[in-house]
Length: 328
Length: 250
Ligand SMILES: Nc1ncnc2c1ncn2[C@@H]1O[C@H](COP(=O)(O)OP(=O)(O)O)[C@@H](O)[C@H]1O
Ligand SMILES: [Mg+2]
Image (tube, rainbow over all chains, first blue to last red; front, side, top):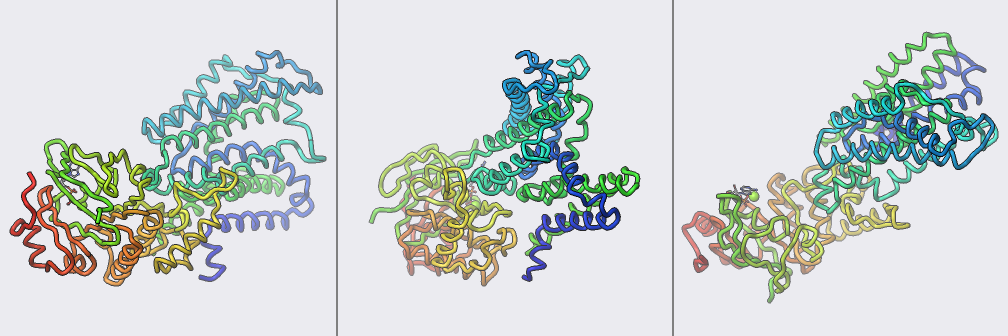
């Protein structure tokens, strides 16, 4: 097989090529506006929160599952974070004040929320054998309901997490960027270099094969949904940090955005195939399109149209690849 | 010689169906033992008992002469008994090395897998076994032909089977040339001193490869032959109940 063919066989390279093309096109169309370091930093910050949840979603989709409950994981993460802040008396922290203890309290709350929803998803999918689409549709609605009950339907604002959401530990680089990068690296190591990731691929590829070699498939699936929940909860923490408020109505399409990113990145919705790098690219394509359209004065709604088309092509290519491979 | 793996007077029922009615079986180190019998004779059930996938209602399983109670496939594996099931149980999206080491990955830093080393050892083992897949080591096994997949499944079992390797119809789905390759592989594994058990419906093939043949009929052993003691007609007679050289057991 030639090198070029080999590259075309990996969907990640195809989407990466598409991303480069889009960037090149916008750079030519809007030189000095689109292709500036400032614009790319802005973009990176914009996609940071979606990147975090998409890393978790990559694991879930590789097991041939799906997690529609991401919005409720994020919103519950926000709500638990501000409730934890309230408990430790940190809700009214003034801008400019830094209390590391408050930050950790909020983080603890958000992670707890993520673990809870992840545990429910995992138990229902892995042990009760409810199809993931419906199981997580259930926790999506239920989780959002719980969030609204806990908040009486209104948002809570706080500046306690400003040091996370607004600072720059690295000169000129907003904090959300290195945070998202850490999650990406951790996800990469866990998925591609660790035994855990290997078993995740195996279960998505053929759960019976995994079971026969002694892998505890149910327990592993539970852990995968825990990862999905925790990344959502953590994204909620970041969201409060960035927007200085909960946004209980503001995440309703985050699940679809994450699934889109993961699928664009070449992760197969049928399980067994996928990559963190692909997901990273898949997160960027819609963001770059939207940004580029805005800068070029095109109605930004074209982004939705373009992403939809790109998504269909990406999944279609995946289908073709699987079919030709399985014939071989 | 002590059988590497043996079963005596095994009874196994599924509800009203008495799949095994006092079945016995013996496989010796360094020999290929073929298990033949009509559809429904209980062959698959018997090897599931031997590989720990099913627990017998009555009877005794012996590994190396020692009576054991196999609690599950992992228990059998720990005793050096590996099974290649009819459906192969490979993960199609993983490459050969990942499949070979699935569930027993070589590790670094306890939680990372050492894929380079796993690939190296797989390539070496495949070369030793004459499985010519070395150039395809990076491909997912889904890209392999049926015979290559079968070879991966058998080679995987052979790499871990210190004692016995059990195969349920390893050539049933293969063409002539692929079958030939798989049978060569079976013979090579046998020559390493492992006890090889295999089920097949292809009687000329069985006569060609097997050192011993055991015939199962209606859930019990009805005949045993050493190499050269039988031919196709006699095997058919034994399978259909017209011939027996086994004292009625029960
Ligand atoms: N899990 C099962 N449940 C019910 N009946 C079974 C089961 N497995 C096998 N049997 C029955 O046991 C008998 C022996 O089956 P099997 O061992 O598969 O035979 P063979 O492999 O020789 O064709 C058949 O009558 C079959 O229908
Ligand atoms: Mg059978």
